Image: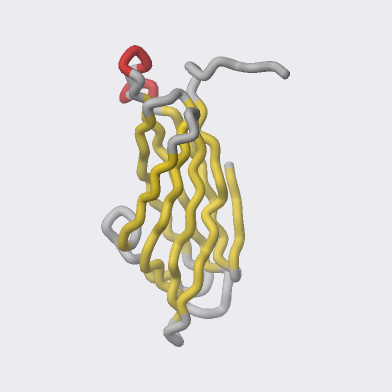
Length: 130
């Protein structure tokens, strides 16, 4: 599990390789990632936007930006948690993802929350020992 905390917003990520949706012979590898966002602060916040940077094993970068997550812009009162699962395909057997959420407090202040960098690893990635 990968964890980060920004301004009392705790973000936990757990990636899982999806063997049944992947086809290594066709250079198609798929991961799901489960995210748990917890508001450990004292004020209500809303998740407005997301930004992902996805880098595959060849160094190709893809930026994904959008409104909310999984079609929602969740509101988190103090102590509340929002969880969701999404996924990403790659053409290489490994990669890395990192990102941010744009949040807004009840006073209208907008701020960024870090999503921890997490590794996308498949059993098809050759192991290299240095």
